[in-house]
View 1 (tube, rainbow, N blue to C red):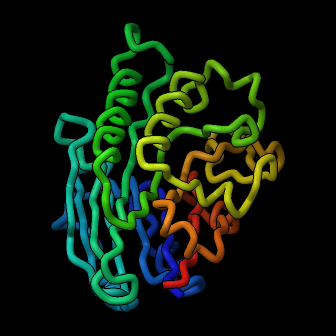
View 2: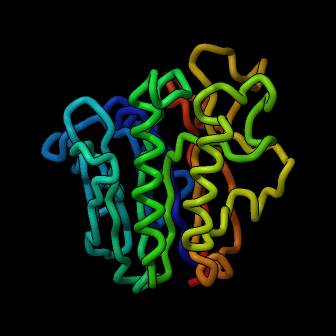
Length: 263
């Protein structure tokens, strides 16, 4: 069994103790981190080394964005796409060499898109849609068993947010974003493992704003995803979100997701 996790950590150096606790308690074989907010030379390699995650691919930058994949299973770095088209560190892909050999694991951090859902008024929103458009053209050509995981910054289904009607004009749940993400999904026939194992309309959130008392109001959104190629999806045996991390002291606003594959 191969266990893969993804987590927008919102600063890996600030929360390295929480990452260590998660790795110790849940023991994924591979962990994909987003929003690490650190350049590669300052990444806390030693902490991961001590925990047995001796294989690492880090695509970082100072203070913003950044992704990293750490693993107990050997891999080779496979790709770094600039889907943002401006040099931001938002993707790294690996090919597994041990368990799961030949499988490609893509770790992505899609831009949030700003506050206004209008390309003309808010360039960041247009950049987000264009980012997914570039991903869609890439997905058209995939010919290997692939998983793409990370912070997509879109909650696609009505039940993926705490209040569908209230959020229809809020960036992360607008019809334009959902349609754009659906085109990406169709480009490769991706299987959304989150909804494969936790069927709609069951509660399945991965993010709660720091601005609201999340446990009381439960104003969550499903912004983080784990999608698989159709053949690979048939090997998935379990999927869950680890909500307990949101209760830890000074937590990330996102929680980890874990998928188990029979490889």
